[in-house]
Length: 135
Image: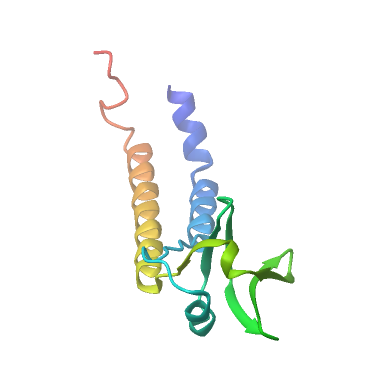
């Protein structure tokens, strides 16, 4: 067990950098519970989750109305893709809840940071008796 602790201590800085990087690039998207119309979604210009009548789910950066048609805008591999949407083939549309998304992202980052700090604390202090559960 002591060698395991030495290995962890040796690589602790790398672990902290890894977890910190993951936290910074993490973002949560929370969608509103109520479904909206295509027209309303196009006016709002927010991220949207669309479920079709075939139970397929699509996530779009936003929904746009142009040339008398609705399009879901996605960004795939840096390329913008416009997927045509037909109202009669859609089951529901949920828009991003920006305030809940912000709160979820902050909570995730803080929770991960606390986890890393606790991990570091227990490694640094030798873990106390919590590692020796058999006694």
